[in-house]
Amino acid sequence: MGEKKILFVGGLDAAHYFKGLEILLQSFKKVSMDIDCRLTVVGEGGMRGHYEKLAEELKIKDKVIFAGSVDNNFLPAYYQDCDVFVLPSINRGEAFGLVLLEAMAAGKPVIASNLPGVRSIFKDKKEGILIEPGNVDDLTAKLKYILKNSEIAEKIGLAARELVENKYTWEKVAKQLDLIYNYAKYTPG
Image (cartoon, rainbow, N blue to C red; front, side, top):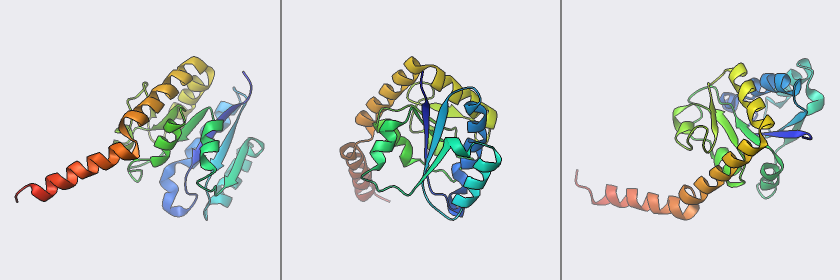
């Protein structure tokens, strides 16, 4: 099976506390006791030290890589290298989650919190997997499931890639914005 790679991308500052990295670190501890894996955290901010200290307290610091800020030109390589991308946001502060689309475009399965903006991106268990916000055990169970079932992970990743190609390309988004603009411009009242 080999070492499995979990990826998180997000700001590590107080303004982005809602991204749920603490939940992921707690879950990762449980997952790593059962599966040979590592977690890469891409992002920078004033709370990085807090998260590094938490990883140390959880006795997982040797399995967690804090990569810091990554240039956008190199970010695709991180998505390509992971087995699963996780966005465990804890509240509605997560309005959409562009990083989900980036991971999906790379053909990777994503696990994300069941929040209004996030759940509008993909269908649960088809192009991604939804978790209960803030629930460490739910995240742990679904991480273990996707990491232990490579055929299902690949199927979800391929469906995610197809969804991005069919719905979220810049061309398709621009057409949708144009329709909305014209509707607003030419609709009376």
